[in-house]
Image 1 (spheres, rainbow, N blue to C red):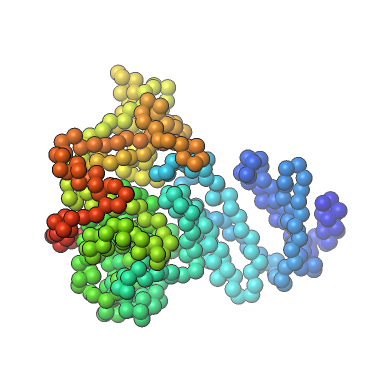
Image 2: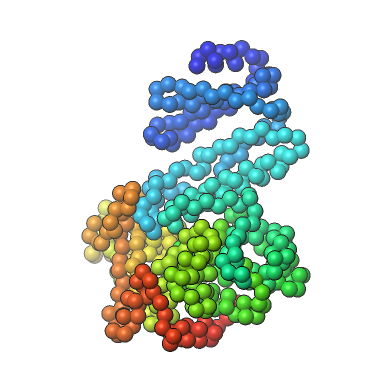
Length: 431
């Protein structure tokens, strides 16, 4: 390696560019350092990186480039900095420091701005895909830079990724889409730089396609459960109003949109639950939260009553205690109140019937409370606390309905289908 390094260093200083990158994170926990030397005259680069106690050198021939146009771009994290282990609804998942990613690209001619934007978008897609994989419990990938992607689930129903510009509206019009049903929140749009106003204005000007928004929080099964009846009601009414083909989308078209499509087919079109899900999966690889759909179905039929619970962290040797998970998602935190007389921290809250996982954050450290129920270890050996909320006032009939609908292969009676359709028809329209 020393000979190779000296060979390049013998070149004139005006001929070489030295790039160095250091990170405190590597697979083995040791500091990672990379050195790159670029040569104009030799049109080549060498990259040195450590492997155990030795240095490896990689050599690449490069196309002609101008050193003055060499630019570096930092990856952008979609979420705030998290500890090395971050809880998800499936347990703790180890993360890497997305902010340490650095990308160097040789940019040719007048395409520098395009290349820069492509690299930035690709970096955001990578971070989003990792967030999605952690939250959904399946390996999922979304490439925003590749544009619109979708699949016909039925001849009149499409599930796909988000629209990125007015051009996508016109593209969907050409295949007969009459309703574009958007589940994204403003934060989702801002992350990828999507101008929703441009898209909506294009739909309005077209005169024959309606853009409808019905927001659901990304990667949040509880919000999906709570929002699903209102969202499907809005979808049902839009389809009745517009006819034609309906395009349902979230950001990637892999979680929220598939879940809404399954619920619509189950509640409105008369499909069995597994029949709707199997049809969806035969057309598009995705990972909808099925338990959220089942729970939402039971909520419609038995009511959505909330029940009080109390979480407690004992100890006066800390200055701040918070909790994450529960019904707020893993991206949010709720502080516990300190009771000096009891020497403990408490949180009083009401939840609908269900099972909720959570984790305490004590002075910034994510920990479990060993005095409260703990989940079984996931494949990585990580665990969360959980609370099972039961409605003790529920009658036996309601309990039977909920138990049946939360089973592996739930189905609805004819009477239940009538009740759900009536509920969706009568639900007040959202703004």
